[in-house]
Image 1 (cartoon, rainbow, N blue to C red):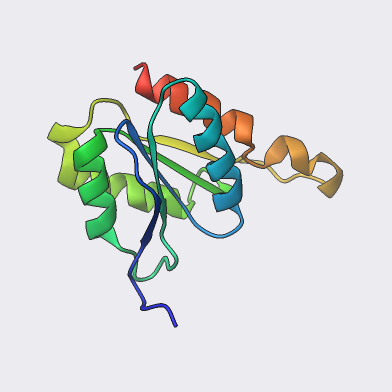
Image 2: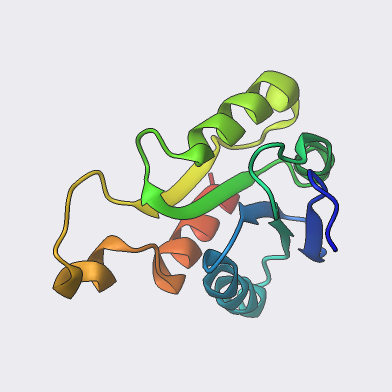
Length: 135
């Protein structure tokens, strides 16, 4: 049984913090492996629960890495990633070395046939990791 509001650090890293939950985690893990080939060390955090969410674990990681990328399948506007981003900017603003990055679904309805274009993919996440680290 998992305790509520306790995130799991799946992968330790030092260059950027990646936060996600659910099915998105396996895609984020693949992006972390590809980023490692380019010399980028990613810390991957599984929030496990959204309400309540483990702000302390995410804050500690962002203070260590100086960067944050959030990925989820919901649209970017109004998605829970915006809440995480706002909270982390409030508490870690002076420690951030780059703007918080969100790789999420598009802000548009889509037919299922176009789901591969809508969903965050490994390559979209990898591009965002590189852009954030090189900001």
